[in-house]
Length: 334
Image (cartoon, one colour):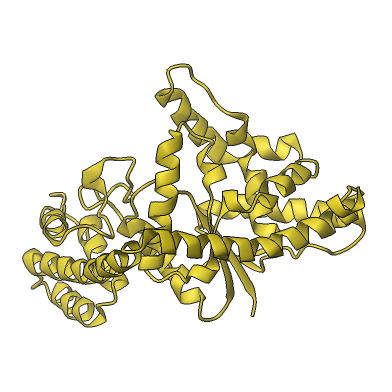
């Protein structure tokens, strides 16, 4: 099996934009690939945060990922695999300042930091985190990284670091990872379909994967459809509702409603009811799974820690070989 690596930051509640855009695909890939999925809490420290909230978010996300179908043996918590950070430092020495300074996400996030922090503090970690991201990928010698097109730049940096490392040590040690552009729907805010579904825009702009039925139905019922502009094309709000229905797996409902749309007989009340039913069906299943998982929180945490420890063995082996190749000492050599 080819190896897949993908990671997610523990930034709070999982919404359907996260799920349909990435996590749903993670679950499917487990059947065809050797998968490593990481909760990257080191990365979450690059922006202003509260320690207790970070720890809580890590475990909440871990429970959520298991509840939607990620296998515990595929899951690790980054801070339980410290080899990531050590390899990240080594990779700093194979990455140029100029390459990092051209990363567009640093510019975007540093602007957010300046706006939200009264001191305008921007951490060096925010500038340097793409190198740690490269370590996250390469430490497992991943063949593929499922990413959106906005993340292509980061994967190119990982490939550049791997290539420079290989050239320096005179050996094709690291596989150059490839992007895995799978069909991942772009989910928009039902309150404002000109924006992506996102927690940062406020509560009305995202629908929680584990939301209560009444709230989900209320959010879909109030979803923006037409903006009042005359157009021969489907409005973003209507298209977004169709996207949600299709992504949730209701192909029969999607086809019937699309047929109504094409014939000019679509009723928005039917479209919204179908979208709500599709999301509620998924949410109900996921909430039931999560209730079972969190009934024994200690046991579940122990399983995730054990999985992280097992996955760490892969990282330890890679780091040991990297240190040999770069002239560094391993502990046993001291």
